[in-house]
Image (cartoon, rainbow, N blue to C red; front, top):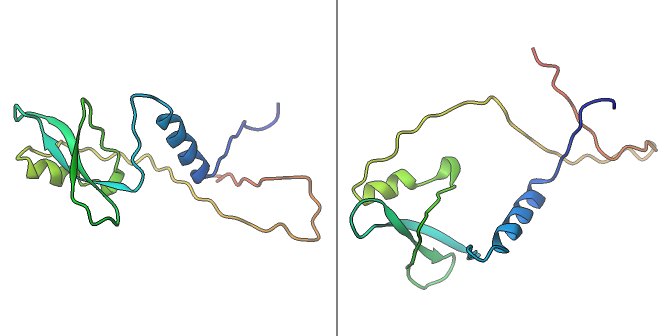
Length: 128
């Protein structure tokens, strides 16, 4: 076999596929067009037992969903530290690890006079 095996998908396809597979699980409920606005403190005062949220663009107020497990997957834009501060809890210790990786994608139009059989193009960075 020549070269390196390679699998590539568009970000939209990956996100849609993961969202659909998660939604198919009976223990998971997906609420489209909703946004978390804060955390709900556990009744004993230690920990988190739910989230406050609202529907984007709606005039309705916030409502609460209680959960046995709350996972925040907001990435760099996460407001978790602010929400914990509102509850009087310290922010978790964070550690930033730079994996020195990145990705980008771009659409190219194949030249009209080029009848090559290829369907994709990949550029490998030769490194330092």
